[in-house]
Length: 156
Image (tube, rainbow, N blue to C red):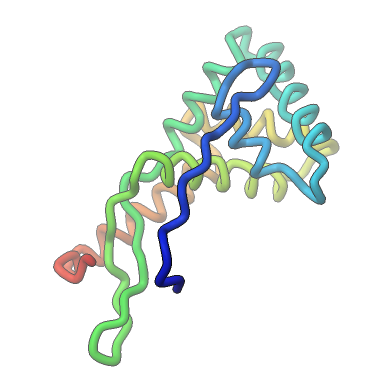
């Protein structure tokens, strides 16, 4: 761990098409080998698929999906006196959003399907309807925190 200054949080740029910070965060999650244009194309096409399937605004569906999958608590390993405890911690808003986007992209990649655009669109639609693997992961995280509530006094 660095004993120097803490890293400054960089300002997040909005994406060019929708002017949304959320989409630029999602682009960073999907990005592979520095191919940002390809990642943006995947996201824009999947938003079009969402709009065609649900007849609603794709950006609103994405925001709803992220809201539904954002965890409130998570467990962190903390070593105290030779033993490691899973200590439940509250999640800050920015980290919660990042976790939600990470889970959505992870489970979109794992889905069976033809293209990444359709897999991502289906995962976002499922998350907005409070079903799917990303929601299951959030509930599992909350269950872990609930089970380890006894160690909450070990918070940093």
